[in-house]
Image 1: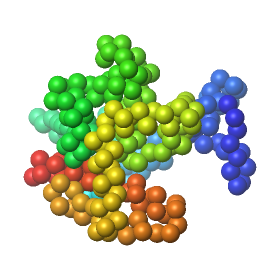
Image 2: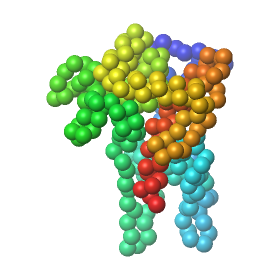
Image 3: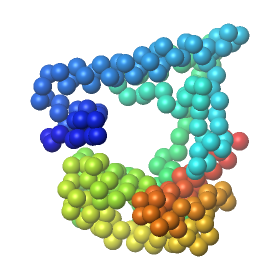
Image 4: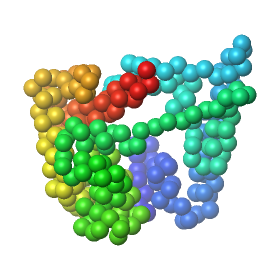
Length: 264
């Protein structure tokens, strides 16, 4: 693995250390220490201090309008960020229990952002995959690699999943390169192949950016608007960031609208 330098020296970020696993025993200890320190400071030390003295429980606040896309956020404490991965993370989660005689119930929509994208773009292949109740990531992998769905390997599916969600966030070939083991050239080809297989998605994304340029905003299926005034900036980086916001907001925002309607 190649070292990455920052202004202050060589990077010791998690992604860099993950690449260095096995190079030296200390890497494993550093990663484990950071995980334990994060769990201790964020949850084990912090949560008990937030217990309500009258109820003996922790009460969060769900914020309706704090995110730019309309998604709910949670604060004091953020109960949307309780760890679910890893044995130690699961133990923190087990601290949340229902009162005697009650149960905690979890419900979630399956791949709601991608379903919203399929509806908004009306791409025939994407719609067909959902109508046929296919695994959308395997279906995308089959399209990209030109194989039958039964021949899709876990690595193929993992890459297709990255591309599927990357498209929603306006991921570039550089972004896909950083998120996978692909070269820049391979990443560029995968994104091009994706849009060849799902031309309706490409057309929708371009028309959404054009709408943002013309109107100065984009909106969700239920009419929630977000101003995208920076899309007219002469600064390329600012303009491209605004284009990513324009692409992302109608999809994530529509998903948020649907979830909120279901919760009422």
